[in-house]
Length: 126
Image (cartoon, rainbow, N blue to C red; front, side, top):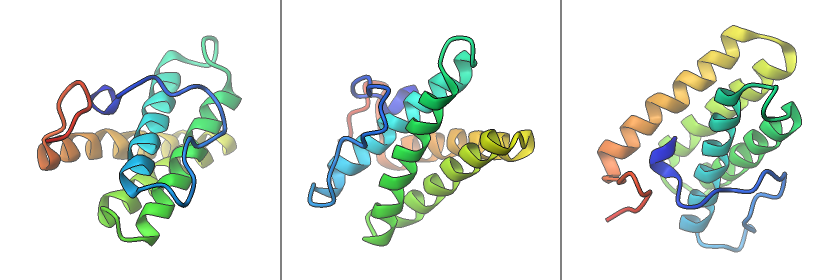
């Protein structure tokens, strides 16, 4: 998820956007939360608390859900919302298969978005 990181999202349950913000701002904040969640997941529970990981996933999932409902990059937003949901529920219920399905989905979508939108390693779009 490093491709999407524009700035380090703080480890907080606050999404960093409101429903009145432009979709692009919600998209960027949601990608940052997902990137933080992936980073936390890869670091392991001894480095990043479980609660932080879940808070980041929920913030990302909420943003992608809102974007899907407004048809902003709807197909990708729905898929990312689903990936966040799978990871959060998998972690919460100890379902490793579901957790990894969400993780793998997020990683696959990262590659697709980079190809489709030309996102550079700095996170900027054309």
